[in-house]
Image (cartoon, rainbow, N blue to C red):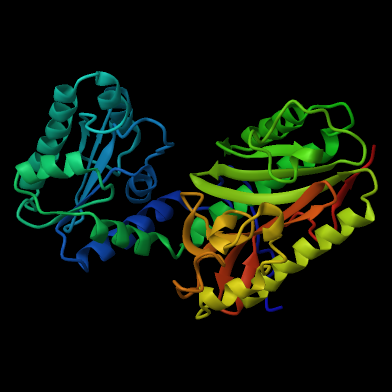
Length: 424
């Protein structure tokens, strides 16, 4: 297998800011992302883009959009490089003080999301959308881009109609395509953020090894891991620990109050753990005591399937060929699920891009890639995951990787050759 070879002393550094070595350069991180989005915009027919999606806003502005606020913030990027950001009163006030790289921050009218939803009247929702559109159009006039098409990264028909009332030519597909293209290949600082979040996940895995024992509940073990994740400066916005019969098929409630028992498989999925906004997806499997032969065999199969895929990933390879490394119908256990087609097996065996969102380009999957292939590019980052049943339990394993010129560099470092055994 061809892997990226690190230079001497290359790898994860500390999480704090220091003056005695170069670490993640957050100023460079912001500027390079902004320049990539601006360059793609300038190559398009659009004169500006209105970004409502949180990851797109963060990509262009560096603001810590964490999701769930209900679209009460949005950003306009113009072809001349001007940035106008609208946000709620408290957030905007703080941003004006704390974010000197942004010089035009205004108060937002929430035309989408929680506020319109809670208003209770169609007239209120219509007014809010039109007010939002009018505010953006005023800024477009100020910056001289009101005559050119405007990109919009959400396809809300009510908001589109409000802009059309102001005479704006709204382009949604073009905007989404521009941002996907800007974000699909990561800068070195983005890659370092993903390397760092992988290291923080490993601190969480160690907490599982130290704290999982018979009689302890899944929720308690997960709580120990989450505390460690936050201690290292990451945000835990997803993930779970599950055990025993909850490991196959994956339990709908994820972490439960089930007590862990000897002989159990325990697996942890550290997904949506964020460091500077960059999201993890990182599985590891543990056994409570010596694993059974069935558990060892299942783990070996899942690991080999995973590395079969990793060996196929390199610049220029296409996803229709790479996905053949994932299990076929028998290996997917489609008969067990009573499934007939690969698209029915979403999330069991695939690779998905990682970045400011959990799922980004590329997607490598038998359910889609054979008929809709894309080409792999150097600098893409992704998580590759596989699973297998082991009697009435199941194992899972996943690696986080970045595509280099000669293959992949594995960002995740928790031992993968065998199930991690926890003595009990």
